[in-house]
Image (cartoon, rainbow, N blue to C red; front, top):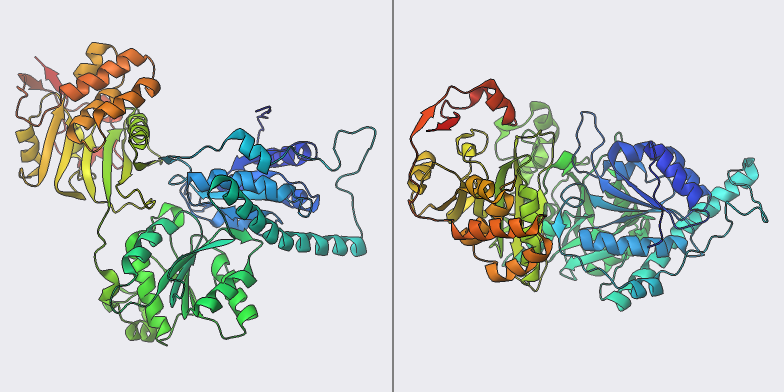
Length: 616
């Protein structure tokens, strides 16, 4: 790629630079959260000047209070900037939308900026398989950039950012809004053409589930994945009407007529709209408000009833049970029962969707919505357990031990072996030495894509045996009966680990490896490659021989040493009581030791058993 990067000193400058560059070349930048808010001042200039630049956004909360994790509030804040807004649900659709975004934005009928949105961290920092399209095929869909009026053209000088008086200004703005509306048709055309070229077609939205669904949940982005699992689970079950997801890809311009027609065609009775962001002071948050307007204008009061739900804020996980709740809510509303005229909330104990314990509910809310709560039934038929067709792995490590690197390697090896894998590290305000988690999902059903964790672990890995004593990290929580526990330890036998956890052999299969000693002997500073090999011994779903083929090409340098660590980790991992504890003397815990291993919370609550070992 013939490209140039500019290191801007702020997001405001970065947005200004792509506007300037976008008059002559294809330009783009990336941001999130407060950085996007800082850009908004100049984004209207890009739309008003017809500059088809791209903005790639990892959607994150905007605070206050301070929160760095995911929600859509930042994207909602730019909805009036005049840019096209596309929402992706995974890494593949993010890449595909970037390619299509430039093609849509650069169309001569459009010439507007665009953004591609992907949920922060769980989307932007996840590791999964992506099909990289052939360069020639992309070039055929997205030809070379054609500048209309180059900024750097002395022979044909033009003025950008001119001042307009009232009459030309209002005509300009009317035309700008009309062009944005017309871009929806271009987006649909490009999405179909992309499908012909690459086998993955895109529309303005996806209807997932029963074509004649009575109950529909509308949302955008990555959180649709657990919803897809629930839709498949509920379809065809006795006593449950048709259910579907309305996964909206194009948020701006909003495809109001097309969505209203789809709901009318399905004869949908109720739509529950899940917003993962806020619009302070409005009746409903932005997605629910736009969808309600679409139904009102295009179906003239004959459309479905609509309820608004807010969830997924500040990194809150939208889980499968949340969709079971929302479909149960939709069923009650479809039966003619009263519905709140303001949003419901997920995971707020004092303001639940179904009130099963009035003593837990806020008295003010009980007075306001008590009658609505009392008329609604939870309807247990929606909450039947969902059989998992995935395996899930959790790694507990300390920041700086390289667990993410090893998990990413395992993900690549699993993809090479023909599986779909997803690895999602947990990021936050931790510092070096703090306990962190890294989760991996293995999809065992190759016919469908699953990106939704059940938090039911088939295997748990501990990079540090002192984590066994952490009161904040109960390592058996969520581990399936008979699941695998792999522990890096120099002193603890499998029997001792069971005693610490008060777990029987039928409860957990314990494996141990002395990864520190192996890595030190080989001359590596990190234990992650040793633990990677050890994990293949404890958990054999991904064949070790296939995995080694991938590792030989991709392990960190020095590669020979890394491969030796993987092999020895595999060879020396055992589930037998084979460690002979060395004679040891215990020292009182030092402040230096605690500083090196800070937990997420105050260390004063740690048990006295957390002591440094000095081997004799």
